[in-house]
Image (cartoon, rainbow, N blue to C red):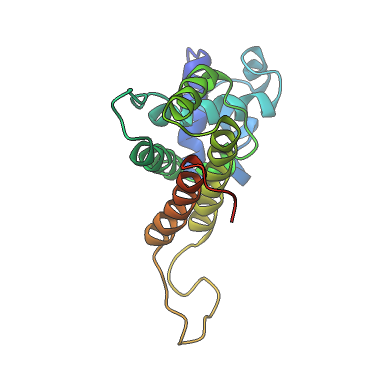
Length: 193
């Protein structure tokens, strides 16, 4: 019998996710992979949902350990880089966006508050900062979800020849800049368009 602990279970579950995809991850497969009986996993996670939550938290590790903004940072550039870091992290795992969608960043709440405080201290109205972070986060998850759903050239919808194909990163950047510029418009005290 393999010696396991909570961290090993999550790590192996993430490796299984990368191999088979979210739809095929099961506690039965994970137990077999670990060389343990399926019920023993319930010692660490009462439900599969609990396991998926732990997996989502662990998968976000690279983003949740990224440096926090400093008072010298330009909020506009920081806002872009924060969302780029989030996107890169989601892309690190197969079905990363699906795994993350709907999860609550329980282990990241203090960092989230510090990011919000940074934006407000930088002159962004608090409500606008909250809505922009929420919108940009959901935009990022949606963008990655679309990217991860595309299995390659020729597998997407057939587009008319006069519609240019734009790569995912360029499309993400364009939308992210629009969100940031809208927030900057509000931070500069201008009324909503």
